[in-house]
Amino acid sequence: MMTTEATLTMVDNSEPAGTNDSLKSPISADGTPELGRVYEVPARHGRAVRLKRGQTIKIINTYGTQVADMWAFNAGQMSEFMSMEHLHAWIDRVNPRPGDQMVSNHRRPILTFKTDTSVGVHDTLIAPCDIYRYRTLGVEGYHDSCADNLRLALKAIGLRTREVPGSLNLWMNIPFDGEGKIQWLPTVSKPGDYVEFDAEMDCIVVLSACPQDIVAINSNKPLPVHFSVH
Amino acid sequence: MMTTEATLTMVDNSEPAGTNDSLKSPISADGTPELGRVYEVPARHGRAVRLKRGQTIKIINTYGTQVADMWAFNAGQMSEFMSMEHLHAWIDRVNPRPGDQMVSNHRRPILTFKTDTSVGVHDTLIAPCDIYRYRTLGVEGYHDSCADNLRLALKAIGLRTREVPGSLNLWMNIPFDGEGKIQWLPTVSKPGDYVEFDAEMDCIVVLSACPQDIVAINSNKPLPVHFSVH
Image (cartoon, rainbow over all chains, first blue to last red; front, side, top):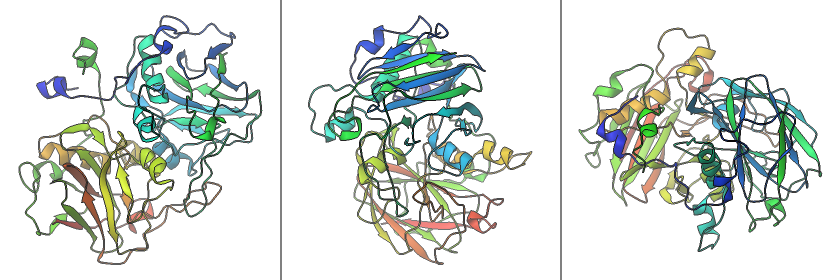
């Protein structure tokens, strides 16, 4: 840990470009859930939830057409987080499936992918949407984004992340061929499909109900997703 | 920019797990190159080089069998860096090829991929090797790593990065099929193959001659690569 002047003056990527209600609507003061209760991540918003090792989070694609961007951080040290590029090396696959350990940037399992009732189409290649993405799509004012939802949902429980790690994009349908050509398509999941992840360490999971309404990944109609912890 | 107590006490991922000669062998005090001079990145080591907008870096796979991990940072702000997950969204491909803009986490072109004399096999999926990787491979003491080479090469010119961004892994042969299954294979490049990138902004490029000698990606024999700026 450095506390030099250089550290003090180094800008990081923790600050949102704007705000939304995610900042003021945590599920509890520190993100601890009521076990078994079903919480909503409202359309275009984010929520952070604190898991203890051994607990399971269930994430529900209530309407079937919605992408949920997902992150996980070591609850004791926010600089350790679930990392897609480390995941690829760990599982020797691009996309994870039930049974896979989701590893951190320190190559430790942070979650285990336990259950998937959908056909298993998720994405690990694409950065969470951010204000820069919407600028390139022609948006001039503020636009909700998964990157800001992450920042705001963490701030809502008194935490922050210096960077925006690559996200696990649940139900996001980004097919690629053996030549590496990528497409952006609507989800192929069904209403009520859910995934479950077991916590392998005390961690903070953040979910964003992706606000992308220009590219068709959410069928151009952002909707809520739901989750519970047991 | 925050200067709260929370900022001061937040650990980041800037510190190497050990050291090697990369720390003491910058190409110049601030990484500015002598134009046209061919520099070596010794086997298992890293080097940082400062490019001005409009300059071109040529990176040579001198022996053909070597992977070079590559990063780029905005010279004015180290929190803006070339990002593989943003690249995927920008080019709608997994792997870049000549003509592609290499974008930052702020979705701005930082480099343009100009030339590739090899067959074009590079990797954007796999995290740079780090001490955690070598621990999982059974290494007990220190092992050089691309992540540490990044940190050490930056320290050698007075800079640091809070995180280890996902790298562009030049010549790394990680084929994947349409189902997402990944393999780890030796390079298919020829001795003397080179790539060139044009700087789209003043930036710091860091190269690591990958020290992986357990998995066969470098044919189990880490060797130098070379580079020049013109």
